[in-house]
Image (cartoon, helix red, strand yellow):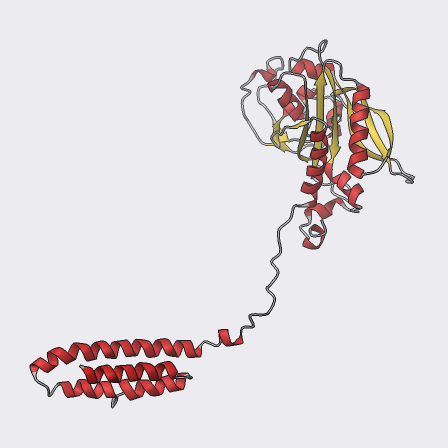
Length: 339
Ligand code: PHE
């Protein structure tokens, strides 16, 4: 019906122009209130003929429903203060980007230097068997050298399944949290034919009291180079080249005779910073012991090589002047974000 159409257009127009929730409510009363335009028209319909009821009824009802919705919607729009108060020219909030932990950064630096010297990267498990962590590294049971590594032993009653212990009289294989990355030397040499040179980054565990320079877990990087004529001079060159590049300085070096059951001869490497006074102990190293080569069935008359092991935390502390190893594990973002 044309007069309804006009009313509808007027109502929609008025609603569009309404500038407040109050005005929208006024319009609701005018059209939909008890005495409102549409309410009245609907009531009047009762008096009308069947035909008129049939044609106008649905139209009026649809109109009423539509207007109800539009008023509700408009009220919502008008009561929404957000956009009016929002300053689009304001700078955005800076999102904090995650970053690598300083230990990851230093580990990557160390590995990158060795990769550039033609070492590849190998890894091994943190929970290790006694065989790989000790026996195969020429550290038999009850040997006093085991005391060099305070060990977290794991509970286990696993029966010995492989032939690692064929020669021993053990019945149950014992497991532990590896005390060093050296067991990966054994794992790698069993699986690969020499020549090769690898570095092995990884986490190690020691059953020790913690203090400024000791943690119950820390990280090591193991090195292993096996070839037909690898000698101590090669070890010295690689180590000196590595430390000079890692610290970006020409350092002084000292190779002190030392003892590790899996190398012979064994050395401890000390460095001195240019202009520095103190010698700093930075790694253990040596020529791979023939008993180790025998354990992995590499012919020790044909092959020889060197191995070394260093602590990642210790190097990070020296390079970035970090006073306490526990800072790496305290989870304090003020520390972490400085790197
Ligand atoms: N695995 C030894 C340690 O943790 C370090 C080392 C590695 C020494 C390789 C010599 C050769 O104390």
